[in-house]
Image (cartoon, rainbow, N blue to C red):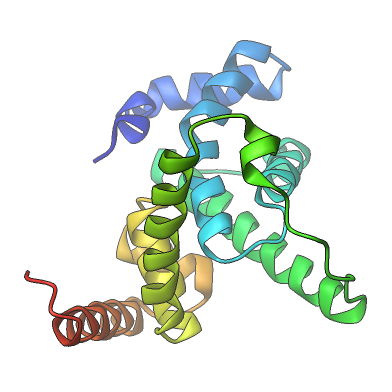
Length: 191
């Protein structure tokens, strides 16, 4: 269990946090955002969102808007937030399919960031490698693995997010991991 989950693991404490957030307490909202935003951002970024930061913000706008309708504990809340993220991502893809964006020229990263070019290149290579592995999976396998690993969701929570039975989620996870293992073995990467 991640530190973020432990942060709101006590049901009475979690219910107080929700009540405070519903009442407009900025500290409660900050606590919720800090616990969940990194995972949501990682999920939408890994799923190829065109503007992951903007989409993450959109997810939390929906959380704020619909918080009054949520009932349940911390695990259910985490699943609910990732379900919103999943649906917002699908909505973004539908919008982009209707209105394709013109290609933009890539930024000159050395000038744009002014940072360590070598470190940025290594980071891009690592991200590219992970993206390549994820792209080799079916969309359902990719969703399951990202929600399990990046989202830190249980099998049951993932099933609720993607609308499949828990047994199907287990199979997708098993097959996705097996596909990644085979790909790494073909590339000569030791276990």
